[in-house]
Amino acid sequence: MKIAVLPGDGIGPEVTAEAVAVLEALGLPGLVLFTGDVGGAAYHRHAHPLPEETLDMARTADAILFGAVGDPTCDALERHLRPEQAILGLRKHLGLFANLRPARVFAGLEHLSPLRADIAAGLDMLIVRELTGDVYFGAKGQRTNDAGEREGWDAMSYADSEVRRIAHIAFRAAEAAGLPLTSVDKANVLETSQLWRDVVVEVAAEYPGVTLDHMYIDNAAMQVVSHPDRFGVVLTGNLFGDILSDLASAAVGSIGLLPSASLGERQTQFGTFGLYEPIHGSAPDIAGQGKANPMATIMSAAMMLRHSFGLEAEAVRIETAVSRALADGILGGDLGGSHGTAAIGAAVRERL
Image 1 (cartoon, one colour):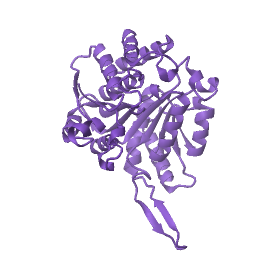
Image 2 (image 1 turned 30 degrees about the vertical axis):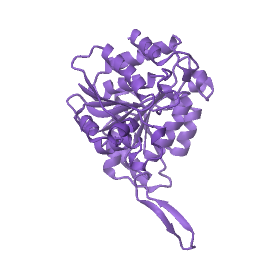
Image 3 (image 1 turned 90 degrees about the vertical axis):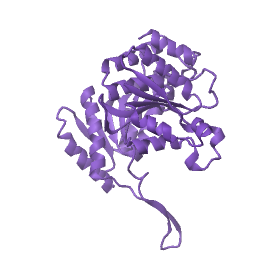
Image 4 (image 1 turned 45 degrees about the vertical axis):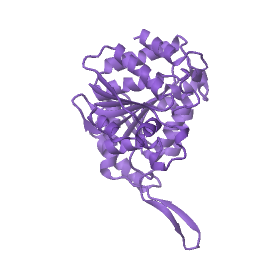
């Protein structure tokens, strides 16, 4: 079981170290971990945020555990050399088109959500976002219109195959968890969304045990903050997924508790190849101070065991240990507590 650990910048090395310690504490047979440079750290050592040796390492791994990238000392570099290009490059070169982002309010932490506590208590969803298509990757530009004004334009499009492959991932996730699936689009005004909806309906026929409904993006955004308990798995495109995943993350109350997975079509001998990372950034203002909350990275490691290695029981053990630590008052600064990075990691390992 080969895992490429790419700590990156800022608090990345601190939080990935705790996640690695949790993985090692499980005593998994055949676990092999190797480390590579990405982001600003890679630029300072190799003059590029994604060196070829790191990319080769990622290609030979069964999964990637990623920390964070972002280094203020690199802000003046040309765009292709900035730290953030590392994660974009990995997605592109490794074909990682599906982003899975769970958003859950843990029991006892409802007061941290900007939502009313009784509403926040019902927030427990998985957002499946298409990552490599849609208006972000379509043709775009600026032109002069007939009135002589400058006009910006962007082309939104999805091919049948792009929708079909992300839909299968969402339906499989819903099927495995016994949850309903909501597909979010804007089919009443966008032809791209009409194709999206048509293909999702076709794929649904292969998953008779999953309940499917459709929702327009504006209504979905409203429902996330008013009735989050109506969602199980949410499937949507790149643009709408960008909006909904950040909205759900804010509703949870702390990005220090939010893991994510980016998956592709490549299969290893164990499962689906993927890249797993916390959604928070590199937080350079607290880097090296032992203040970062590693729970999001630890839960990203749990997602890795589930999706890339088929180790559901071990994934649940980690997630349960995190839940118990939180219930016991093991809280980082982002949650209003005073526990540091190492103390939080140790608390999770004790509860394994």
